[in-house]
Length: 263
Image (tube, rainbow, N blue to C red; front, side, top):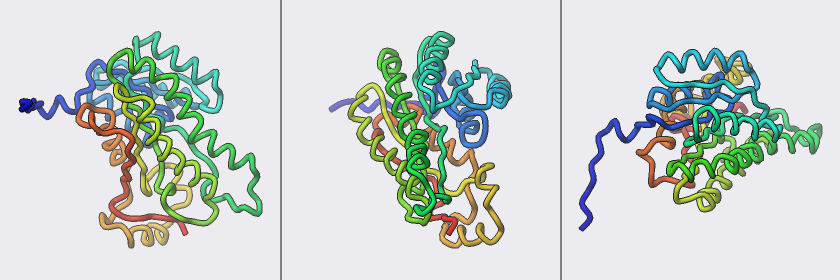
């Protein structure tokens, strides 16, 4: 019988010496995730369109005693993705964790009577193609290092059904299934998973949230509050850290146990 190897609790979440890329890491869920990974010991590369915001995030990360790097990156431009990964490897020597957090789209505004094919294509370019490409670029470095975890940010919209969401929700549903398949492509050295936030207090949600909408959302939410960025970051840490070394191809929804929609 194989002897059970007990690991100390801290070891299960220890990312000391690991290198993590967080796209869209300058604000919101991305920044909260970057800080959580840094607290676990990882060196962090923030890849973001907003370079000044990324540099501000780097200062907060370095205050935790790890190294950090800000890289301006448009995930819709392949040259930016290639250059960003090359810069991170040149700076830190490898990549061990990739948080494919940057994305977006026209969710809630995609009325088929007015939306264009280009609108829907952009959803998939932002949420599916960019993350697939970054995974392709980072996986060889992860395999060479002997440790790799790729985590996508998906969405509750990937399983909800709502009007004016077909492109955005369809792209996020594609992420869920892509993750399950990439786990087979990149294993055993590299794990691939996804975190699907429910309604989380980010700048994007604040633009549409009213007391009435919040009350309606919480009516179907067992944990009677909206999510915070740190709630999502905790799930990201779980997938990034050694505690989940036998977990791959999975999507976990962090949503207070319920369903929150705008309609």
